[in-house]
Image (cartoon, rainbow, N blue to C red; front, side, top):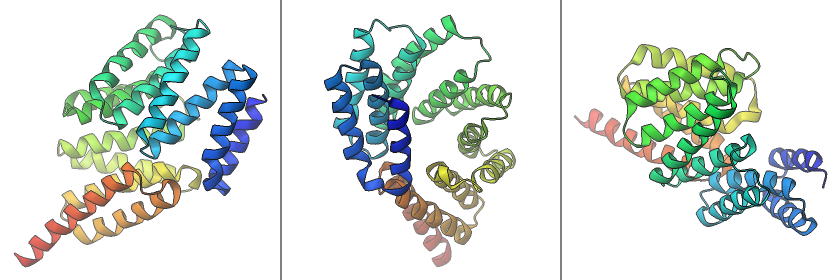
Length: 268
């Protein structure tokens, strides 16, 4: 299998024919399996983890996770960087489905592999710290999340070509700062992120989540009308890109709470 061509076609379908992505991806997973092309199979299963995670389809996502890990173990690749990459995707899926203890354990395993195989300033650490920080937020440990994101930013700013990853980290950091009432730095981070995302519609999902964080910033300042307008824009762009998934429902819930507060403020 020409995995590079397959991934190129997959990217094209995400942009131009989103409805065909699932059938194409699952078909290629079956093809790689039939051909015994285990390396391509692992790559496609990792794509499947992200695809089903983003669409909040737990069973299919978990099946891809289990098969990818098992295949790498069959290949004798435990403890390698490709194995760590798959574990990172598995842990992120667990976090998305609120399997927090499982995610914590797997992130720790990834960290152990990185410490054996990477320099402390390696770019891959930034992604790991980002993901663990998001887990710490879900665990209501904002101080730890803030410290991890500071470490991620310190690393990723050394890689000028990683602008999108920088913007994503800035959004995550802004979200933590909002929860600790650090309005000034939260605003600085979110505006820097939006300036990066805005020209490139390829990353509409990340841009939507950045807008959601900006809406939260406006809401916490009492700018209810502006916050609602920004949040509606975020929801619209996210629905077009990903459908009404868990992230969309989170924004929808934020909008409902925002309107309730606004209504109480006006009536009061």
